[in-house]
Length: 297
Image (cartoon, rainbow, N blue to C red; front, top):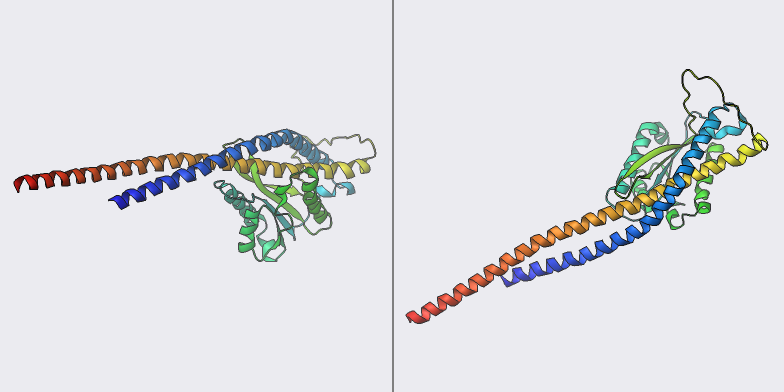
């Protein structure tokens, strides 16, 4: 019985050590989440409004050479951007983003993949590890796997510029981005959005009027700088959203792990006390039995 008590004590100590780790990770994630949440909340309204403005401009300028980012063409080559985290221990966050990317590939790019014209650009190690093993028939881009080490606008713009150049050079006919959309610390959900070509705004059926924009300075000069800037900002939002979602998911997962550790320790302590009581009862019985034998002797 002493061996069983020792085993239970060791398990209790092990769970306590694990709980200390999960508590520390929860606190670290909570601290990182505050900054990440503030960044995405500051960026999101600006990025959403700019994207709506871009779609509105492009939907009213069909046929203009300057708006090639909004021109849809037959898809022979495609790029799927998958934005995940570098580390795990954040629940089903990475799995859900990967599932969203896989669903988009299966729904939109089955033929492109069959013709070996699908490129998968991975940002984050978890997504790269998954697609490297299971999508060996695709072109896996690993140049930006560790992009989360530096989330500055200039650094992220390298990726969005690469995508825009690829679209203009017709290396990609369509580009989608799968990422984690941050809602709050407890809720994050995966999304897959079309990045290029830019989807035009849907017009009402009874509204055939075309917006008349006044461009100052010249339209060509303005659009040549405005449209790439908006696309850079939109892509930056994808990364900030995913970064905040990762920390929120990890904080929630570590909080659940800490709570579960409390339950496990409670059960182990009950088992320990029962075993200890059994040991004490047995020893008392042996003492009483020995004393009775001496008296009878």
